[in-house]
Image (cartoon, rainbow, N blue to C red):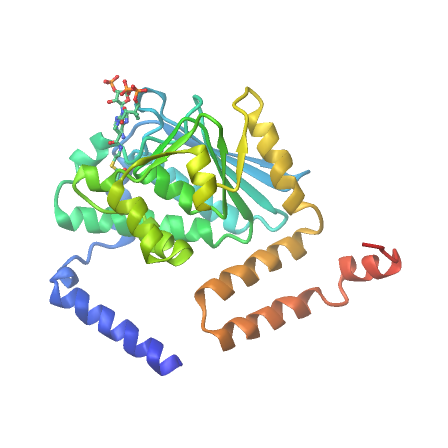
Length: 292
Ligand SMILES: CCCC(=O)SCCNC(=O)CCNC(=O)[C@H](O)C(C)(C)COP(=O)(O)OP(=O)(O)OC[C@H]1O[C@@H](n2cnc3c(N)ncnc32)[C@H](O)[C@@H]1OP(=O)(O)O
């Protein structure tokens, strides 16, 4: 199995070399420096130690929460910070101003016009989305208003999508003359299979909350209201109740199972299980003689 994986990585590398991508060797740090100077909007983090739920909010009011270069860097820093939040259990990614995100900031994109820069930007934000999806926290994208293009891709990087009943999701990349650049093409195919992914991406259609729920993109529709964030926190709390160590190991097991070959995934599952066996929560549950 390891040999096959190695062969696959080698052949992917040669495919990239064949296509001339190997000359694009700008490092992540170099490109972060470039993105940092494309300033517009902000991303904030609010960690609630009591519930173990963090809220990450995108705010770029003048551009319907478009994700600028500086916001990509801020989001990346926040996700790095969340990686070491040992008592965390859940995460909500949302937008201020009653909308989620209108995609990549078109002004930022105008300033990085070459294929080489596109490749570096996609590498930077793609890694950031990958880190988000692999956090040992149960994550939810709360979509109000629009999630377009890169905004739809960000929502796809969370475990769950909760939508207000007036919200819409559209992978408009094709209409913008590109394809998915934040990694959601791969995510859509892996989650839904080729046909459904092709249907969503190639039609580039706008999907309302009901359609998203029917397709399995959205897990919950909430009535549009002022307290939709509180409702989302309560919904997420159902999954986050309990010992952070248990929630985090559970999520880590799911990540391993979705990415690794069977044997490796089982080995990690056993390791994560044994870390909890005989632990505080396990002993407490035994003593309390729970009836389910
Ligand atoms: C690999 C990543 C691929 C991508 O993400 S490509 C980007 C995809 N997104 C887009 O093309 C968004 C295009 N914009 C729209 O469709 C509409 O503006 C949208 C979001 C439905 C909102 O419509 P309305 O509510 O009618 O508001 P509006 O059009 O007057 O917009 C208000 C101001 O926001 C701006 N805006 C919206 N989305 C933006 C974006 N992505 N980057 C930069 N600026 C953006 C829009 O230009 C307008 O600015 P202004 O007030 O005219 O100066």
